[in-house]
Image (cartoon, rainbow, N blue to C red):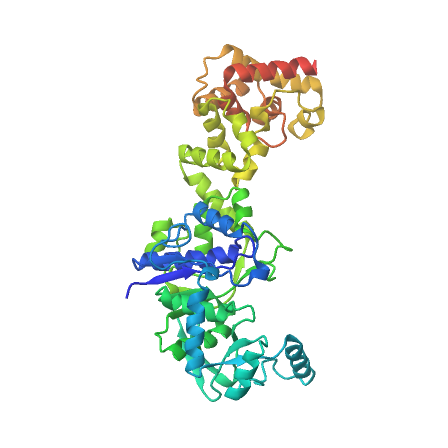
Length: 492
């Protein structure tokens, strides 16, 4: 049977970074086995439904290249893909369980259940259903139904069994059935619970492998009992450990960004984000760290996923992103930059489009070695996309550089002015600029930093910017001369 995996989120808000990890593992495993990756929306809990969350999730998944083979946006043979549109199916299987005596009606009110739970807590007992309705007679059930008493349907869990399954990551897991609650399968609003619907849907959609967080391990015995009740073949289970912050706190928006969309808005490259997430639990058994999506598909191995928690370290993600910025061609990075700007900062995008593309690429070629992610780009480019100005005196006068007065600065700036006005410097070649500049400084009997510091300040007006060589290369001879002259006149 061909491998089929799925991602089955609830539409309760944005896509979390730990959910993206789950999607990635399901996607990699399915693609490696030439199988299918499906998306299903578990929207039976209407009280938690958030308008627009499904559309947002689909958009984010497309943005990170994890497009399902089948789902709401590309329906095929296993739809519908919203549980709220599959209610007739669930009712059919509820009836079958009742007829097989694998489930029973429960007429206990919410007040009764709350009271029972409080009594159990007071006695330090496990809080679970006490079985009040499990042994009702047929006459009692019929009368309650005839009287329209609200009811749920619960699974009749066997009392003296050992429920066993083998987890790809965790190994063999055994749970006594007496520790498993008689879970609700159908709620009073006639909507199925998650535990019931997920089993029905996974079976009907031919899901062969369930890859999810390990917080679902306690629920797995309940699901196995349902598979057993229907005599259905079990899928393979793989429970991956949760993500926690480097501080060892559970991932929470109180301590940092957890929405995938926020990482896209910060302009992390998809390649870096996917590469980093894949390696958080999975050990590729090599010293290599950087993998394309195609390489991840070829080499991913669920059996090599760690059992322990994984630390989500933003600084480590920055490292991966910086690597991809540095090692990807400037032309490719420029196309990505424009795409990101069009989506997240259209005003700045329109501004840089008024400049020649060659000029913009020169800036990016220099800055891609300095920035960690795209959202830093704008802050580093003020000196390129704004009208020139005179640098502050406390910036350009620098005693550490033996620039203790305006006259010292003016003397140094004249070296750069003479270079730009009188040399045959090849302004399109950075190495040529450096060679001529250093030679000119030697002729003036000055130190490199004595000349380069005020020149950089005059060209960029910023404390942090590319150095004078790079500024002249990017700005060109005419604009560089204009800025040096303006600074000299301003200082005079």
